[in-house]
Image 1 (cartoon, rainbow, N blue to C red):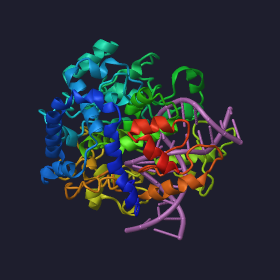
Image 2: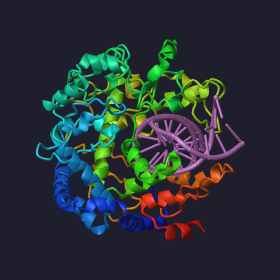
Image 3: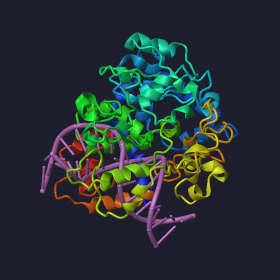
Length: 500
DNA sequence: CGTCCTTTGAAGCGG
DNA sequence: CCGCTTCAAAGGACG
């Protein structure tokens, strides 16, 4: 995680942040919701606890809260969302056309069994959408839906709104453009898809609908958000579609990315900021301000997304995209889709030879089940399981149930265990379940270093973010700094000081 | 027009 | 096993 190794000092920022948040205006609106929220939250927590920390100390989550000053505002805010969702379940969640994110729900056993107890409808990541949030779209598990393989009303809503009927598994396969062969792996149950979005405007046929993650090579990825276009190439690029090149499959979004997608609009609205960099800083802070439970929701969504992605593109590897960027001629006119910003340093490009060398074990089994991982995965190398013919263990049994999700007991949803929040929350002594699994957090540390480097690394001359201590205070001293401060809850005073 | 910036997390590679 | 790098989204800003 973000936690800085030694940056403990920065961590303090967490507290600051929280406090700061309180000050700022956002809370006003939320206040009214307080009453509600407390209760909700409690429920939420309990449900989460049940699901994920079942054998664990139930109080863990609570404990965390207690220790850490809670970023009330945010929390409340979220609750607000939650409430909203529950309130308007029928309409709210699906009503808006989400930009995209055609998320499918995996019938993950884990999820089904543990993730949302029927009674805990509060946990929904989905937030209301005033505008739209992508997330909601992916939430298969709506507040009330709880991931049932075939939620009774969900489809209904969808169909009403979108006029689309619940997609069948085939649709999905079509939608995702599964590789021949891989289709079979998808379990039938996966078939429902909460989303209509994709069907949307473009009116693509079921079969023609691309997975959001797929981007045509020619499309400019950066601007084509897969989101709006649904991960896939957007709108009008139909022409480009015809290009023979195989579509680029994008990485599944991680928890934070999902969160960003969801909250971005909100932040923009509140702060009137437009720069993504600034917005992202705010979002990063807010992210840290979220409670574990709240983050857990996103982690879980991310996990599902990964699973789905994995099922859909078993042979895909994140590495594929690395190459995509550089193989084409890094940056040249081969803009194709992805070259994205090439970081200097071209090292290995040779790797392009291995088309399919997915990781998988980690995602599939989770950290707590490393014993199931293949050797290379344990060493953080490419997964050989898939290479070997897909014998992935449980992969795609047709039910899907087998898929990764370890039973609740063993495979707690990743998030919880997360180490994830080392950064700000020292407080939250992660009560997590012992074995925790695929926690989101494991990998984390890496970017600390990176973060630090960042400022130094490309001082691009312009004003932007001189040196951002992202954590606690440093803020961008750009025109938007005030807005950021506001958004994040920092007072100008603080801001000023830090900038100095 | 292309890339940077900025965030966290996931994945992968090299040492 | 650890550290580092890249990519994912996004959209204004910069060169």
